[in-house]
Length: 61
Image (tube, rainbow, N blue to C red; front, side):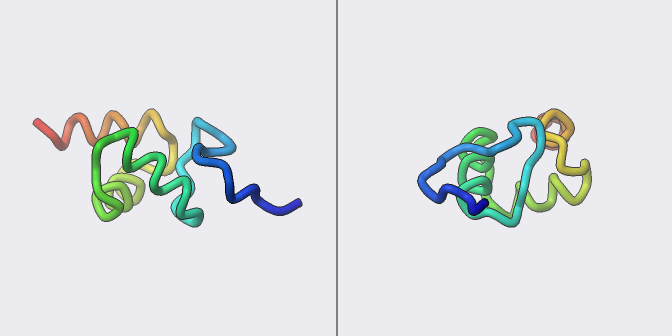
């Protein structure tokens, strides 16, 4: 089964996939960060959406 490129959000809302551009755009917009900031956060906190959000909130202060 192939990915539906018309999708604008993630297939699994609890995980962040950096391999799909539409997911990177979704998460970057959701968290208000650049692609590079999102990549750093995923590298530091793992790909769990809650962990990345918490990391970004801690980093903002």
